[in-house]
Length: 253
Image (cartoon, rainbow, N blue to C red; front, side, top):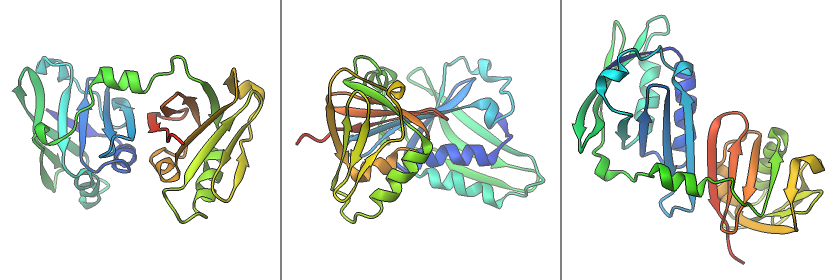
């Protein structure tokens, strides 16, 4: 199946969201979008990101001929796919040619060829048994908005400030504490106490909540405006700008 790439920059930006968690990824391509679910080795962070095919590809007219819901594309190092685009001439059309086979009733990619009129780069796909796969049902449970202890908004400017403040502290194992009341949210590090620039309408909390994560885990969350849902054992960040959500495990004191 040959697909014309309409925006290499959008595709690379999408792949970067995954690489920050794990360079080994299992991409899933449907007729409408490309997406993936990745997690850290200890499963303390689970991230989902997706992008509409209309933002990166020309319409895939022959997808239905595959007679499967999705194609699974395993990559041991997603960096190789990201880096190959820099070798192509900007004035040439670029295509991704996906070779697939049916394995246990699923469409699985065996090889990717990134091609233009003057260049062809082959990328062998990974055996899916070598990659960790997150089932859709597990993702829906972990990335749930149901019955949170509290939820609130973090705007892009506040997120940037938090990342900068965390950069002042040298120990990545230090905790970041989210303190939520009915009218304010404060984020506390070892050396700072920062109040988010949000109003009461941006906060839903029936009681005061303190929830801690490792400071380093904030780096897995994209610096985008997002809605945060605090649960007993995790905080889930839902981007307000892209189709991305990240669940970070809470640290018990």
